Length: 247
Image 1 (cartoon, one colour):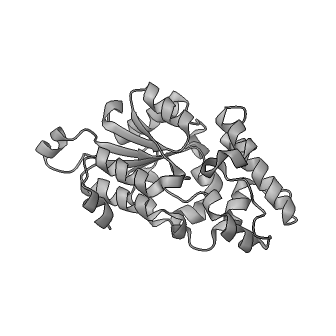
Image 2: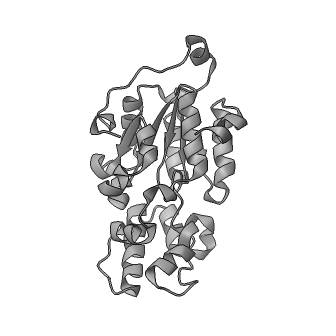
């Protein structure tokens, strides 16, 4: 996706027939990135341990997959620390295990992702984005740390970002969800009213922040990702087979 398609991008006209546009509930799909579009680090712990040369089972913290295993994650959910704080601590912790205590979250994620960033994208996410665009909806990403955790070289190689109309990344805006201004930036870039957007995020506080602004929001369950995207497609008025077959 080019720079002109980022936060400052002008909204493109919606495609599709006028009658279809009037009949549907939503004009845009807005997605969180990490954990929603991509697999979480928690889901790939065993692969990460192998990549880092650590014993299997070293990482026992499972975040949203099993909050009971992760007091630090629960502290983040209570608002006692930010998500950036969470990953900064985890990165330093894991870095210390491999002799790199200075690791940042970007260092950690780059070390565990491998060479092809597209392998980190959920197939159900890719299909939902393709189906939404085929149905004439605009698609955007609203992330607190996309480039901060992924880095620009990896982002440039993510095929899915080429199918996104709008990217609002707090790495550059410095406005984190659930700040109302973050959603306002996304709505402005999408060129749609709050009531015409379906938002998807794995953090309940971000979901609640969207709902306070009149945005319908789905709390994404990383333990049932495919089912969540099937539900998203249903809310968008997209037939299940269209989501499953979208390329």
